[in-house]
Amino acid sequence: MTFRLFTSLGNEVRTFSPVKEGEVRMYVCGVTPYDVTHLGHAFSYVQFDTLRRYLGWIGYRVRYVQNVTDIDDDMIMVSRRQGGRPIAEIRDENDAILRADLDRLNVLRPTVYPYATDHIPEIIETTQRLIERGHAYVVEGDVFFDVSTFPRYGRLNGMSLEELGKRENPESKRAHKKRNHLDFLLWQQVDPGDPSWDSPWGPGRPGWSIECTAMAVKHLGTQIDIHGGGSDLKYPHHENEIAQAECAYGVEPFCGWWVHNGMLQLDGVKMSKSLGNLVLARDLMRTYEPDHLRLYLLSHHIRADANYTAGAIDALADRYGRLRAAAQRASDGPGAGSAPMLQDARERLDDDFDVPGALDAADRAAARVLAGTGNEDEADRLRQTLAVLGFAFAGARGPANGDFSP
Ligand code: ZN
Image (cartoon, rainbow, N blue to C red; front, side, top):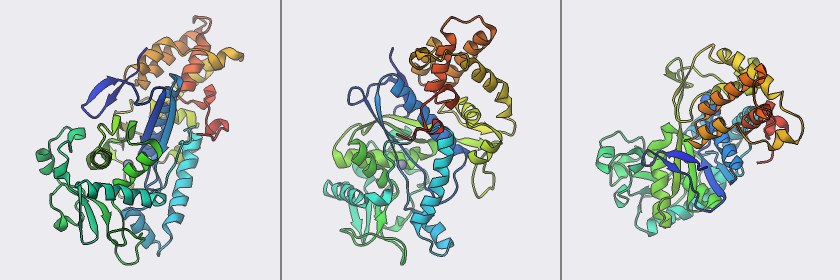
């Protein structure tokens, strides 16, 4: 069977085949830990965890890298607000909370979990390469990527340079110094007192997107198979990442499959701290078992925008109970660990990673198991399917079952 997966680059479903046979190099944009993370983050990381698990199940060795953006405008703002509190302290505090939440949700630990501030030499080296190759320019201590040197810029978003140029550019810092409207910072001067590092262009700090390129290349190589992140990162962050990697290293494509998760809203409104409408995974897990929350999150397709409403998790209580009860009927022998998945669930997952479809198949199997009308190995197959989807109650490996290895 072949696994087919949608990529945002070209907006198409393509048969999955990694650069190196048998191995998947996967990079997922991590958080900027300046504040507490919400259910939207849990949605993203549970989805990518499940994709990673499925790739492992179909036989790939998966190297999964997820970064921590521990230097940027928001980190600096929070540090200032807290009276100059060290950024590393703010990072460690918020990261520990996120990590604890994801552990309870049985999200496997990343193979590598790099901090941007540990990669300043790699960021400087990548920036240097871009200058040497004529893709970047220096203006009084700031370094900009020259978008006009990369005609493919905009392709991930299905837009031409001209069309993108008409849009507002979120990378508007130091606009007066830029050659073109779409150019973005690779390295920037800092305000007095802010964290800075020495560089060939004077003291400063990285731009936003260059760190992901530097970390992906360092830990996965110049060509990777899957790059994940929220759909809100498609422009400009991921467009910038492509431009940086392909220009610095002369590769195309930098990444084979761009996978963007949908956004989670609350009652139709984007969750945000400023609106005060945050729902936290941690709070929900006071009421619901983590696997019950996982079921809620996975009942949405990875690319679908989801709308959380009060009662949405309660509405899955019966379904959750049935899946658990049916999985418990699996034999305790070796069959449970080595059983195949349910065939129709496998087909759904092979077809563009249709997790909700696979869960529907699991529901049907659970009904048969509980009614006593299923095939002999149906409970084993059901349990295996739920384990591949990461449910701790089905025996899935992971932090919730005491396994903290990547
Ligand atoms: Zn990123």
